[in-house]
Image (cartoon, rainbow, N blue to C red):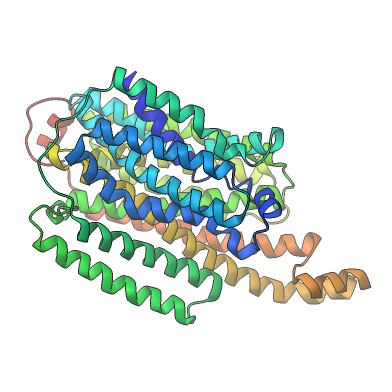
Length: 493
């Protein structure tokens, strides 16, 4: 029951990253968003979520994890209610940002609660397997739920649905989860502010580059400011007696490699969901509900991969699953680069999507276990917060890079398609094209698929880098396998 409560919270927080994707056209027409500003419905959540995760993890260490967990869930519920009641774009964006704050408080605390609730060894390995499967599959579940809610009710229910779920979690927590020991300390406010502002600036820089280009002055200013602020964060943490992020965690090559792998893989999985959602709706013509069901196999296969990794980790250790998982993900994404306007869901999308998902299921279990194994109890909140921050920031940064690749390839393809379109277009179609700049029909499909294919090339490169890091950096000793089996082996995993 404790694991059900913890996993339910993680599912609610993770699926909210994608549940609004299918609802975006309806939100745009209802609240008057422009196409450019509509992206901030997603970004307002991911930016505050990724930026404040480190502070959320530290708060659980100092104030008690169950107490902070409940507060984060309640804040998330309140923000979801306010978002569903929004009457204009400003209100919705403010609510989405507040949702990110609640998620940043609840998510790292829920992961740390696994470390304090379950004994190290097979029991904790199974718990991590469930948690990792929920984390990795939440995006696909969000797309499915979004399609159902938009088609059967309306877009506001993609936010309202969090309210009853969150309240049930809050009511069940005191009964099934015990409070963790509170560790004396103080909040590293300067470290929290510099890390948050630095990551927000970095993410904003990539998002701005995707929209305005790399030569835009605000893009360059954001990157420059991010470098300065993050450098200041490192200096602050090195001098702090109780840093929000103990930098000595990066001295362990396995843990540092784990964070780097998570950064790369998150960029790939965010990109896969985003661009496949566009492809199946705009090119294959799926309705929101059909698009949601199209992603349902992802969750099932991720669960299979997570189950396999959890079962055999004590025998083989995490490294083989990190390497094989990244190779499978790269293979699936490379397969997706072959999609074109003649592709079908069964012939060109389902197969590579399942290969990718199997690899990601293996990866998330191994990465979660590696990041928190042999971490002192008083630092599990910070360690889990850092792992989650890598996931969210990696996803945001990576998606922005992929969108930039998509935009460049789409513009180049459009230059080739425009003459063919104009030679066959009716006068009314020519007038519409001059007004909107959008190619209709098969010409527009060619442009979109060219951009999607280019984005998948870059996503595949991210996963290849992750595989190389796993091969070169990660090291597992015999004593580490003893620890995974629940034995007395010593040494960091």
